Amino acid sequence: MYTVTISKTGQTFQVAAGEAILTAALRQQLVLPYGCKTGACGACKGTVVQGQVDHGQQFQEKALTLEERAAGKALFCQATACSDLTIDARVIGSGDIQIKTLPCRVQKLERLADDVIRLELKLPANETLKFFAGQYLDFILRDGTRRSFSMANAPHADGFIEIHVRHVPGGQFTDHVFSKLKEKDILRFEAPMGTFFLREENQHPIIFVASGTGFAPIKAIIEHMQEKNIQRPAVLYWGGRRPHDLYMHQLAETWAAQGKLRYVPVISEATLEDAWHGRTGFVHQAVMQDFPDLSAYEVYACGVPVMVEAAQRDFIAQCKLPEAAFYADSFTTAADLAR
Image (cartoon, rainbow, N blue to C red; front, side, top):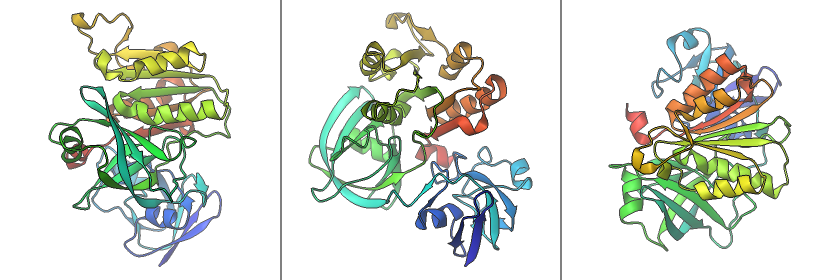
């Protein structure tokens, strides 16, 4: 057993030999930043100030480069301790959210687009799930493998959970959802997961950036802001290849019409038959065109890894966004992990 000390706060926790540092922290109700927990997204990256770790093999070099490893960086979702450690990592919270493993019933399946289904999941009558808007759950499949999906509803809408599932052809779980899953079926999940949620203690205006079903957790955050009457100025940029990829476009337009936020849909591969007259190109570049100076903003970005990575890189390097003001959830699929 080793002791891990957070350099900036002095907080300590114990980690067993072979146990991931993030796993040990969460087990002791100390929440460090994380996303996929598979070594692919880089959200859990921090610095080992003192001591030695074993990085293991379950990560991609784009998430932790050789240069970063040489500089003392580590992915805490994968790194295990080889000695007592002092680490530089942000502590997000502690003790107020309990991770549970629960069954749920499929209450409703709604086709939002040809390749997107909305699942409404009913919790057991004697159970509640406390979570922050924007967090995700892991479905636990029969073979023990997991599939992660963001919860698209805010916590005040309790009693059910909303999930947006995009069909990935050949994907074990999404093929099942689109071809075999039916109402009243029972699924099993673990939640809540992740640190993609609104930092309510801050007052900066917000830029939301979504691609595809990355809209789901942002929808939850926006609905939470409406419920809590959080008045921070906000702009939503939602990108897709074709207009039908913006599968809840009318809901976003309704928010804008009600003055809740400004909405900018962006399409990258519009065809003549789409008759699209709105913004075109990559969604993060539309943000940069409109906000060349992001120094006074916070950005919440969610979607495919290539979009999230480009937004983080370019917003910080070219638009003066403070590194600590970029919050993201990168939708890493099983196929991404196999690459």
